[in-house]
Image 1 (cartoon, rainbow, N blue to C red):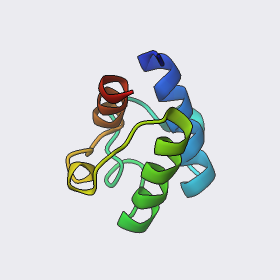
Image 2 (cartoon, rainbow, N blue to C red):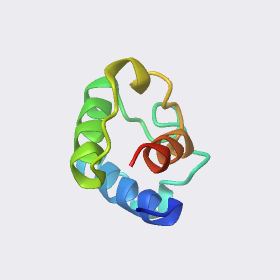
Image 3 (tube, helix red, strand yellow):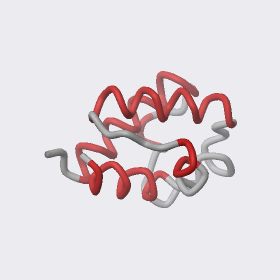
Image 4 (cartoon, rainbow, N blue to C red):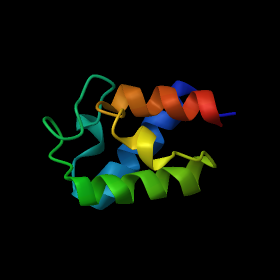
Length: 80
């Protein structure tokens, strides 16, 4: 089971690969859209990559609730 730190690190790498955001800028309190400039298409890519990396299923109707990196980390930790 992944820890919050491992999930955060993995998400930072995913966001870096997809959106070109430096991994050190990806923090729990950062908003995907407002702080990290992740648009809806990129967010879909982030979700798919996170599902593959962590083995978590993130339903489409849940994605809209993942506003911050912390929201995504919490969801993944709770559902892996």
